[in-house]
Amino acid sequence: MPAISIRRARVEDLPAITEIYNEAVATTIGTFDTEPKSADDRRRWFLGHGPRHPILVSESDGRVVGWAALSPWSDRLAYERTAEIHVYVASAARERGIGTRLVRTLLDVAPDSGIHAILARIASGNDVSLRLHESFGFERVGTLQEVGTKFGRLLDVHLLEYIVPESPRA
Image (cartoon, one colour):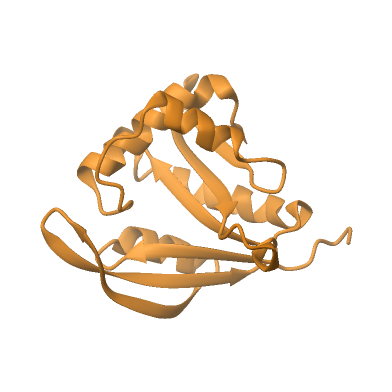
């Protein structure tokens, strides 16, 4: 099995990030987007992330096979220390621990990013993602009933929360 590395995303990673995301749009309930994202959209998304909201990629054999990000939860200033987590792995690279490594690395950098709370929205039925997040201490804080429709089904969304331990350097 090829070695896996995790690093900060660069603008030249955007084609692979977009491809992985659009695969999830077309085939999973891991995102409630229903239309593929364009290269321009992903570029705007990428440029909207700064030091507080890192984007990471996972590489195997020089190819990006997964990515994860912390994104702003809201544009309201009171939420500035709250982020939402996103994790996507190419279907051909799943079940190799890539998602686990991406989440672990994001949680490791969160204290230095000034993030205090991380939220995850996970569709009911996405048991792999629920187990992944709960294995890191994310706790279910509520369920939004029938708030999304994808693939002709009404779906509930579980809201999970993780409180970031204070940075030892703080």
